[in-house]
Image (cartoon, rainbow, N blue to C red; front, side, top):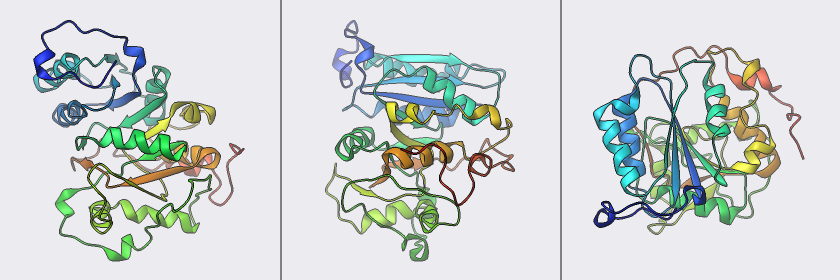
Length: 296
């Protein structure tokens, strides 16, 4: 697989081996066809990186891939020469299980977990992959930003911004530690406001320290699998949140992790499909102040 074919080549047979994808983009979805179509449109604009799409659908009553706007975007991806894998996964055992199901179908050296309500600026996946390789860490995240907040500047929340000035190294983040306070960086349009002050050249990126990153995270697949992926799902009830925090904290402890700015990821600001958040996965898997057992 190569980078995307331009429209002048769409009518030709697709050649090449999809297993050569640099990135598997793993998208879980349930009942949000409009948002999913927008997410896929953003992926179709990532023309400078070789990726495969793995889409796992838990929608009830209608296959998301049959909705006209979604089907159209899937056809665009295939015309570009992308491999598209559609998975039906109707039994809902929770977010962690759904993410593990996607990981079980991944083959590329890097996996991008992308939620079904995120639009990506062209070039975002390429920059994330370049950062992952250059930094040599376990994951790189592009924090989603809500552009309805673009005029809402929050210096009290962005004051915790701290770039990685040297190599990205393993670190422990827990509730109650100073590193946990970094979570405010990803509220509202904070990533856009911090990036505006960095004067990064187009196509460039700056790594920074994170508490975790939601909705758009590129992992080194081997690193994620080394710490067990999302295989902890059986200890959680189906109604939970924070599964991505658990996976990232475990990867950070072994391999390090970073966010990059500018982000390039835009949250569509649709209502969440995770309405029951009484069980927060880190509270089940970790003591707030102690490292997990997944240490080097």
